[in-house]
Structures are given as C-alpha cells and as structure tokens.
Amino acid sequence: MKRKAGALLSIEIAILQAGIAMLRGSDPEFHGYAIAREMRDQEGARSLTAHGTLYRALERLEIRGLLASRWEDPEIAAAEERPRRRMYRVTAEGEAAVQAVGEPATAPAKALKRGLAAS
Amino acid sequence: MKRKAGALLSIEIAILQAGIAMLRGSDPEFHGYAIAREMRDQEGARSLTAHGTLYRALERLEIRGLLASRWEDPEIAAAEERPRRRMYRVTAEGEAAVQAVGEPATAPAKALKRGLAAS
DNA sequence: CGCTAATAAGCATATATCTGCCTATTGACG
DNA sequence: CGTCAATAGGCAGATATATGCTTATTAGCG
Image (cartoon, rainbow over all chains, first blue to last red; front, side):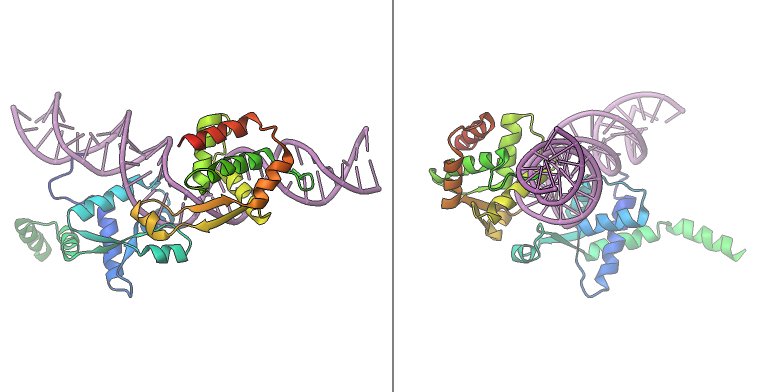
C-alpha cells in the first residue's frame, strides 16, 4: 500500500487505542488473539480470516517502538492448557503517536479553524 | 460405528505399529501431529482434515491402556517456538494387543511404519 | 496527471491439540 | 434378516502465533 511516511493505518490506531485503554486498567498487557476476537465481535465485518493482517500489524508497531512485547511464561500457558501468548504493551512512544494522530491539524490549519469558529 | 467388542480399528493398529517401531529406536516416544503428517504424506488419500479422528483414536488407545502419554516440558516447546506436544508411548498391553491381532499388517500400517522410521 | 515502486491486505497453510455436532456405518439383538 | 443403538468418521471451529504468496492500492515522483 505504500504507506505515507510516518503515518498510522486505521488497524494500527485501533490496536494502539485498545492498548492504551488497557494501560489504565489493572493489567496493561494484551495479546494478539484477544484483539482479533474484539475486532471480530465488535466490527463484525472485518474478516481478518487467518489473522495474518493483525499479527503483521503488531509486528510493525513493535519494530517502530510503539509496542513492546514479551513472551508469556510457558508454565502459565501449560497450566491453562492453551498455546503460549505473546503479551504486548503500548509504549510511551505509542501513546504519543496516537495523540499526534488525534490532532492531525497543522498549526496554520488550526488557526484557520479557530478563525472560522470565531466568525 | 459400533465397535466389535475388544477389536482394534485399522487406524488404531496403524498407530500402535508405528509406535512399536519407535520403541526400538533411540526415542520411543511420538506425538499426534507427527503421525498425522505421516498419514497425509504417505497415504495421500486419508484426509484426517482437522485431525479430529486421529486425536480421538489416540485418546481411545490411552483409555484402553494401550498407549501412555505425558506432556512435553513446556520450556522445550517454548525454546523451539511451537505449541507443546503430548508425547505417547506404546505400553506392554499395546504391544500385546497388536500381537493378538496378528501380523497381517495392512498396507497403510506398513507405509506409516516406514515413514516414521525414516524420520 | 499518469506511472511505478512499495507494501498492506487477503488467503492459504504450518504447528499442536481438542471439542462439538451431525452423519454413516455396523454389531448385535429380536 | 431387518431394525436399532452405539460409535467412528468427517467437518467446523477454538486457542495462539507466524510465514509465504499473490493482489490491490497508493504515495510520491517525473
């Protein structure tokens, strides 16, 4: 898709926003499959059939430093009788990146907006 | 299918014979997925699409005491970056049961045996 | 404004095990 | 010998993550 330099894709923003919400809770970590489930249930439409898109998005975010990951203790996964999870956490950079997207308006554009509002 | 009392199904015989061959090797254990792979590659035909049939056969054999299983150390699976395996081993009862059935090894069973031995 | 190179999305499949649900087969009994 | 009940088989999907391959889209440049 040839990404616009430094831009965030909608799926990436969705992941980060979900992750930021987690930061305020008791457990700041999440894992890929949980996100996939949310997206399937909430949006309905979005297929993510084999989850390939999602896992690659997570990988990209980690490479860019917006997410940090660690592998769950294998003993825990074993005790719960399921595959091991990779736990993600939104970094400070990740929060900042979402903030920046929240206000994509450049300074001049903002001024114009204020001007329009005042009139 | 309403099994004939005490009889062994062909898939069960195939598993046990493959497992008995393993007993003579350096590693007497095997896991379900390896068997499934052999069957897919060797036989071609047999679908075992979702492996449901195979895993249930393994379960039946264990319940009957013809197989014994243990879970692989989760640390090993983690180190090899794959899901944890359930390791099976043919018991003395398992060997006896195959003996009792006789040596009319079916073609599928032979092929499976060859396959595992080769790996 | 049109083209091309970059890359995200989608689909399939690998790794491993397991369960639910429905169908097909068959042993055993009347 | 036909019918019924038991159960094996097949399909689908859950749990988790990941890679390969092809297609579609688009940023950015000329």
